[in-house]
Amino acid sequence: MSLQLIEAYIPDKHFDKVNEKLQEQPHTSYWVSSESEERMLIRILVDSDEVEEILNYLESVSNVVDGFETMLIPVRTYLSRQTLNSESEEETTQEDADEEEKQILLRASRQELISFVERNSVTTLNYSLMIFFSAVVGSMGFIKDSDAVVIGSMVIAPLIGPVIATAFAAILGDYKLLGKAALTSFVGVGIVVVMAILFNFIFHMSGESSQYTSRTGVTGSDFFLALAAGGAGAIATLNRKAGNLVGVMVAVALLPPNVALGMSIGKGLWGEAYGSFLLVTVNIMCILLSAVIVFSLAGIRPVRWKEVQRANVSRSLSIVFVLIIVASLVGVIFLGEGVPLQ
Image (cartoon, rainbow, N blue to C red):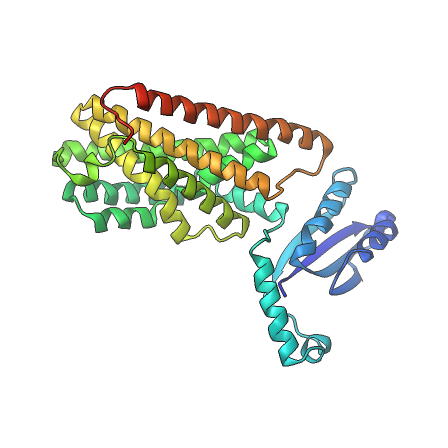
């Protein structure tokens, strides 16, 4: 069983009503203490499945009354007489198996996901440095025509966070967060392109590198790669596991084409630069489309009515906009010369 602890600081004059409402919610354990002369503290130990409903209620009352504060704390271990003695070994094994099966369909609460996404939507020094280093490694991989070095650059490239955050913000209709995430994504792309241009001037990369030539045009497989990367990134985010393995998958679709774009610009090969630019755009749009669909199916929604209405519009517009971009790019690729869809 996965448990989390909710701590809610409640103003005294609202305590009775809120306490009654919270006690109606399913919980493993429940504590009440006096925090101060003006506030009471309620601690609720609940299964992770029940967290979002309780947080939604606390969010709704916190929005209209001052003095409410809520914290969500992960619980790594919980021991009590009941947990130690209530089940036989056979029953425990069966419950663990059932729990593991259920976890496939579960996700973190909306509030946890928002906090996770917000952290990945900010252009920090750490993010910029990691993009810088991945761009250096990736550029050297192109120059050396080394698969291993290019793969290494994808391992350290933190590109998954802001791209998936952009799709998540679109689902919520949070345009401020959307702008921050999109800006962070563009900063990452810009750093990679600029570094690739500089390294091309320094080392004069050969245009016959297989790492380079394979990223100067769009093939049918690129669409499926980007769609799969976006879906994997979205599901990993839903389970707060957007780590290196899934990050590599997203970086596969983003980092090498950006390096190829910078190399092409640096060499003045505008036809190849156009092909790389199309590949970058196709990959970004397919990742966003896949992530938006996954988040929609996962039931990511705001709580307040005005935000719900805005999110419904934003979600529909996001899907339509990305579909139009992808369809336009497919048309350009089919009809354009020198960038065939194979």
